Image 1 (cartoon, rainbow over the protein chains, first blue to last red):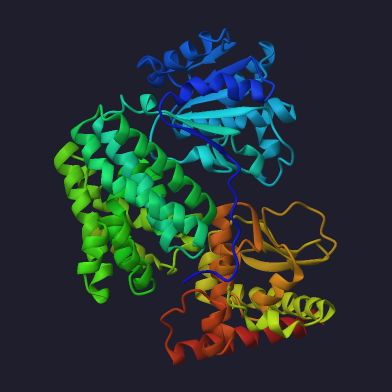
Image 2: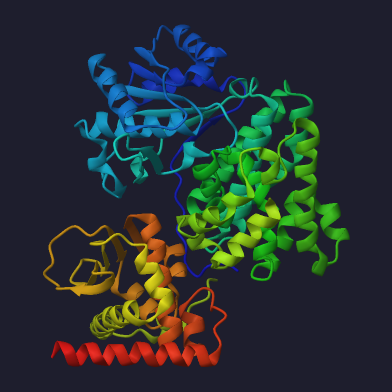
Length: 394
Length: 180
């Protein structure tokens, strides 16, 4: 069902494809910037991905003023303040974020402080507090899953209270996202699979959620098709640069879709399992996706049936009776999960993660009901219903 | 072409919409106060809010608002001139959007999905507040209306509904008498 009203917003320039990184110097100069600070983490720098970017800058006599490579897996306000001080000390004029979700969220926080001033990021927390354009900011994702390069949100942990503090503003969006297949070539198989399933979940939840709209549907449908066509092939042939680029684009497209139409119960459960048992986000998404689709089936049978076209292609869709399409769509996702397990042992059930026990499920169900993603799920789950889904997924 | 809802076709004067929303906000705050005293479901939600938690539902530019606080384990309404910063604010971008929700043409989650409401503050608490509002509407409204007012109408037997409805309206009246 289409909504009677919707909004759609994505001002991020996409710089994508063969030798995309070599476009960064031009992007910087076109924003009047020449002294970028690179923000990344040790893993990304360790595998040489930062060198590819700095070499591309060096070739046109442009240097990164400094490189901060100590972003933790869970972005923190203390880190944001440290990086903002470095930015000011070195008189930088722009930010290049190279990494996954934590690096990108951290860089968004840094951009708030260096643009708005001050040392206390908490002053800018909440929705719409940042009201003006920030410093030139470019994102180079190194995973194909989070879609953070297209979202107007940053979630950063307050080191004092431990709380995860949200910052929401359209001005947090980067000026450009640079998608280059070289950035994801070295991604290990299990992370490739988990982040691919994360992107698939973004697209699917956006496609069936309460805030779905025709434009986000187009992005979601295309993302689903790219993921199902390429994910298994890339796992079989990790150096497939074309397939890697397809996945990177799918992740960004899914990010555009869900940043405009949000996500649902798969994320509510996944956030809660992540918080309680520290299971990686993409893994949770992969585990829960078919079970939540089953839970939502009666309320959005038509939309789930439509998914089959994008998941399995026109031949399978045409050969499947209308009434059977929703079930077939769910079965196709289950089959994809089995394939991921066969290729890289991506867990299919919570019990296979080794991090969740049955005794954890009640608390997880309770936490999931208070997760904001539940708001736009097609059905308001009760505690008993959430627990039942968790038990099936265990 | 996008389907147009009756609420838009009716083209009700903004002044009347404002009057209606203002009245409904007063009614909802009083009913929520009563619900937090007698309805086990709302009581359970409120029990998990921190003591002193303040939430506000407002309409841009802010003249229409209801502000409630958890005090002594239940919800109480705060005066219109309360100047503190609430822990959670749900702001309708226009009086028409509040009118759509309060006249049960669009439920709260759909209004949020349609970008008609801005949520600012503690997200887990916003889920508790929305669930409390949903529960209130399922209890105090006839089923045919309540089904439009909430996203998912719960499994609530008629006898059980009548019992809770009676208790909630009874407490509401009792509170009114006490406050006179």
